[in-house]
Image (cartoon, rainbow, N blue to C red; front, side, top):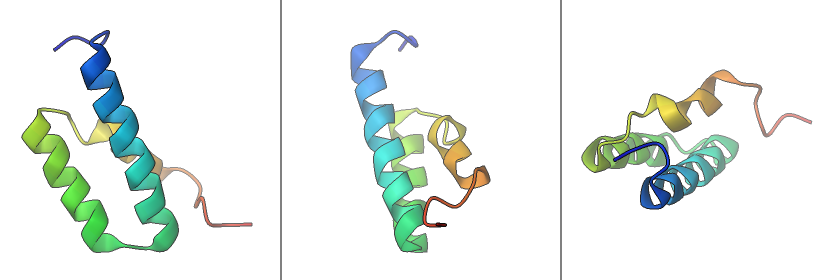
Length: 60
């Protein structure tokens, strides 16, 4: 898959969205499942996992 692959872009967008929600809700099991899903799909978790190193989205 290339970076311009629409399917891969859609998968990454979905992973990022669901990972952000897991961060907001503090759901460690969901984050773990999303990392496993990314690996299964051949997507490096750091593509969407960079959300974890940013500011807390739940912070005011």
